[in-house]
Image (tube, rainbow, N blue to C red; front, side):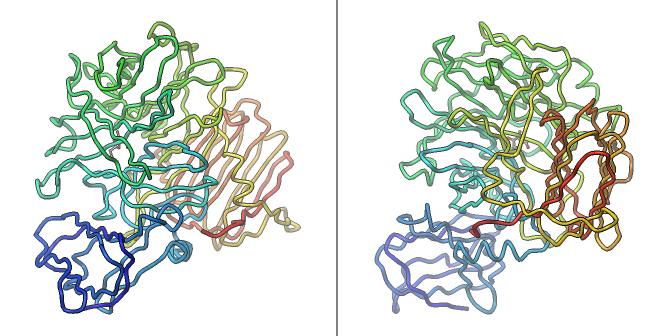
Length: 557
Ligand code: FRU
């Protein structure tokens, strides 16, 4: 198969391929670049076009090319990548607008929530705002829709809702497919030094042959190139684990600590088998010293399956310090829930964290809000999380896996609870259009994101959303307890939270994603369902006042 196209000077083609198959790029009769035969494992290839002109691309076995895109580095920040899709009929190039249109045309893809155009995505990484641009990096497996050797995907936005997809930012340090191993560029975060310079800290899981034990994780830093398109100069800054820490030792978050006059880093780990957050210190960002555990979970968590802390977050907020962490493997005995995130609020003094309360706050009472990462921008603490748990997944055949939560803003309430609200940018990017009620109080929906807001006495509230009469989701408030159920639930896990005398409730729904915010954001619950995801009716029975609004995109990407 072959196809002709003209490319500007400097244009880059990047792709991942596994043989059998081949590709050749030629100009007139001269071969410019070729892979005569892809090997039996996945390899990454990058071709840079040097002189503007017309080329012929020839390939054999299109299924060998697993994910390919091209871009002109001169305008990629605005224009984004162009997808290259090879098949037996030819080569299809999809520009940013065409990628957006094709993503919107997938009836199973949420519209308001970030997802990658293709392939596997998990945790948000490296979140930051540089100038007017929001950067979202994420754990990405470019070779399939399943988890695998980890890279950092990348997208940018000026409003947190309309995203431009960019080239892969960070690669694993070795070809893990070739080694028959997993691992790679694991989760990490962005750090802005006092002079404004940016560094990304992340974990490299070295080639691993077992998913659950015996691997090595080291901490690295990477500096972004001037255009923030690719990570340059990666440097390993921390290899040695402290006594009591085995394989789990990852997901760094770094800050300049005014009180200590030095840099600080938190890492997720297991300490003698207990999930723990470790504290490190440095004077130069390259040499790190262990300062001790900042938190060690009580035996209860280990006894109920918790293997380690993942993605610890630690940041100042409203005069306090907040710790957020996930306990991988933990199942809560009382409800059967797993994949939970926990928050603690307290004081951080002399490198010790003293929580204000004994109990951990369950940050989200669903089980699909994980690996949350927050960052500070212009005085706001903004967070995104990965909406997934390993129990269920998108139906087979989906071109991608993984969605992010709505961007949320964090705050503390008068009782010291960590609260989350969708960022206000939501209202300008996706305007609310109130929908009329039927005489029976129900509201007819079209296949568009919608939002329900209740205000008043919530006790006795029942909300049922259905698709052709079949359950999509159901939410109830009774005796100060809020509970949610999805079509696929078998009742073994109880998704519920105490909501006390809360008088406000907000639900944002987007093709299978239900995000619940009650009690001014102190009680949040997120679920991701895959059945009956396009409800056509919602019935609300409540003593509270309520409105249902459709959310319509103001601008199409
Ligand atoms: C959380 C996590 C992180 C790790 C990454 C690997 O989902 O397991 O701890 O860095 O995902 O993809």
